[in-house]
Length: 77
Image (tube, rainbow, N blue to C red; front, side, top):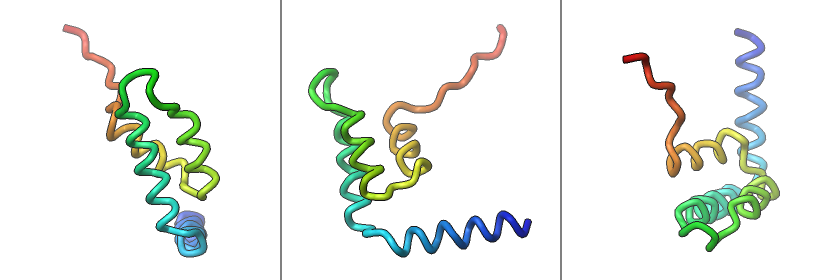
């Protein structure tokens, strides 16, 4: 529990340090790239831009899940 609290504190400090508007803009661009017709946008380029703007892996994956969904193994019938 102590480790979890320390990590939450570090994450909050990191998010306070970065430019939140730039992160949000990069995440919107990532979503637009994901929604673009195949071959019309470069998702990897958008992911790199998110990383350069200090978006977290969780934030980037959240956008990917929002657009593409999440794999769920089908149960046996």
